[in-house]
Length: 375
Ligand code: SAH
Image 1 (spheres, helix red, strand yellow):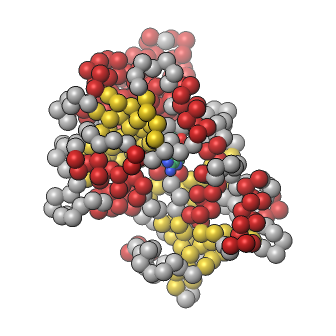
Image 2 (tube, rainbow, N blue to C red):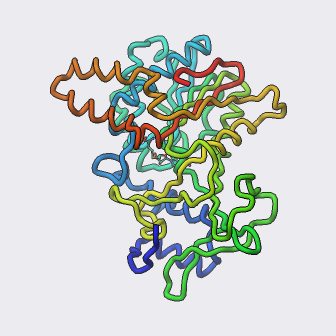
Image 3 (cartoon, rainbow, N blue to C red):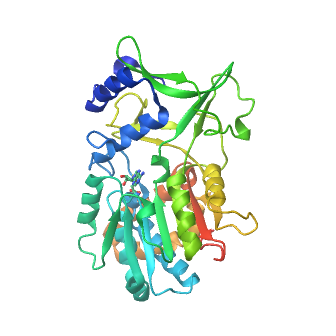
């Protein structure tokens, strides 16, 4: 997307960032993305109205209740595969408005033994969204615990769910120049406008250039994700007890060269420097990097990995395997007035040119568990 610096919006965060850059020098893309999403006063996730039909973007659990219901029942099957432990941590990463967990727990009423074993943990960094989740889940008769980070969740048999969580984790970007790779930065021009620039790479070793980026022509941009806030706690949870995780997100199965940083405000794409703190900034998830970082994490011995990865497969394949069509038919028969909306929602989740293929599902499990359901 082209940047028109004159279309930029002066936001409270852009003023702070411009002052910060003039004082301390350029930011890396990762520092910029972190500020835009997480700034305590002006970060994007302070905005309660971000997600949903009236918000900036809409997610699968907001499109159809069936999404969360199927994931709830998926969790019950996984728990059975684990041998039905008497305590199970059911963790959701970045629950947004809490709709997925609400729908999952409603479907799980069919499996009361699971509900008696379940401790629900929500990992959420935004106070505002935490308040929204408290409201959505208010009627649920189960203790719910909140944590700012996954590493704070207690050990024990664990099931982790994350929808559109990976795409929000800040990335670094590198740019190929005739004299080698440099770090893409956010800087300020002579007219006090934010602009992309470039700075030297951080001291060697911290950012390795992956094989697919060797020989990239000058001007190429490489998006470098870092999933350690996920992979390290998953590995440590998976060492001591059975662990399974389901991560669904938009992105590509194999690493690619390219600038996948994007901004969305009010259901429209805009350039990522246009309205700092007021647009959702995400990147397309590089599932190959997720796979590699998760399988490497915590494993001293490649022959006996702590964590094994299933997939990625497309969202349509995953939801299809879980019986979305059958579930939708039953729901439509029970609610004839809503049948049209139910059908539209499911069609959107499965759309071959849309969410059905752009979104992928990845399973993560401790080495001793069988392949996860749906994969
Ligand atoms: N899963 C929800 C919301 C997706 S938006 C849905 O499908 O509708 C991303 C969510 O992740 C938000 O709740 C956001 O506050 C949270 N989040 C983003 N980065 C986070 C981080 N580093 N740690 C914890 N939560 C984070």
